[in-house]
Image (cartoon, rainbow over all chains, first blue to last red; front, side):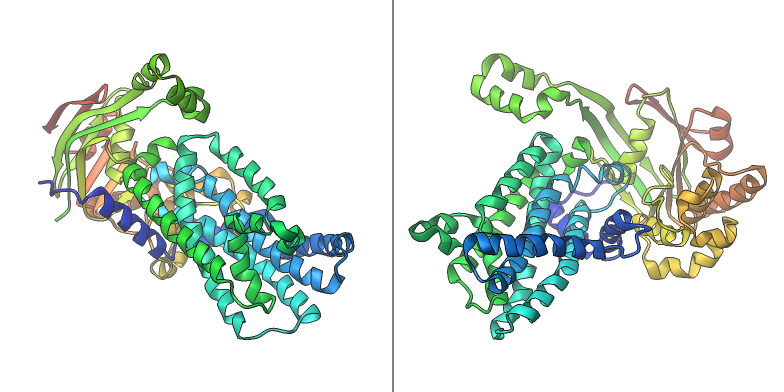
Length: 267
Length: 237
């Protein structure tokens, strides 16, 4: 006979745990997405690296001149900023389609839903890893003044990955239900590229620097950027990021436990 | 102990037009209340399964019969665990092999070899479990050196042979099938039938949806009849 079903909350936690643990499923799926894009090209995924490099090679000197900054230090700043931005914005944009894109799988088979979110997180991490080549090159050439703070970089990247998981489930779920959200999010992300100190620095705002501090994305940039630029970590940024991480997870769990079983009907 | 138990399973498919799915209408509804809010309450749903209860035990070979749209495929997907019932409960014990979509997880640009692992991952089979079977899959699907070619270069028959060989390579307790699987040219079909027969014979439960009464009578010992989402009869034969 039927045993009492576990609570919705336990089922959501189980989905999360099993999904993250499905290490034979999401890594090949994430890789496949990147390979699909570059199949039959000679350089393959390294086109990611090259296209980012192109962008920097042209934007760096131009904006350096415009801002009146020495090109070498500006280029280092821009390279780090840009690569982190691609990672963060890619995670946000792909969050929206995490479940919609997996429709075929979700309707046919029983895999933890978290698997499809891990696939998009993994895909964006792989893109980031390819772009990291540029950061290393730029830093080696332009600014070798690095110290122990560098050890914070892996921790900061991991923190961004963890945030990608909750945002993937939360946004993925909302976007599966309301199909107007993905275009809204992508236009917001587009605007955020200009509003967030990616190619400009907060100090350029003069006495209005607080405007940068109000932007949560700025703090996600800072936790990776500062140690790479040889600066001491910002407590404010880490505080904001950790607060967002925990509240994001709480909000995600609240909605995920309520609507997890509905996602198959929505996609 | 392999079993499938269902109690009062109800499945409703919500029909979201551009209406309720769009944020605009939800916002306007929240703002205006009244007239449009009624709209929300009267959301159109299609009741695909309506209070279905059953108990499948080891040795059961269940044939599901019913007209198009009677809920056969939905019931299979509920047993497979893709859809969770809106109300009621379903519990399955045992390893399920779903033959509902044998190409699920395969990618046209990936090679046959890569696809063996992709398909296996979606079936819940780990790489080290499927690795020893690669040679056998290759031989059975008669792909030869094509195994290292992208699947898009295959004929549809070759593609199906590969999908079939992978999907049937692992034994399961419960087998779900939407119509009896049949792939390839006559020579291959005979070989495939033998393999499928073995897989079905060693499984403890078979759930087969079909409108072919003869197929059901030949393969099943219980018949479930569905009509408009309701189970009308479940009898032994």
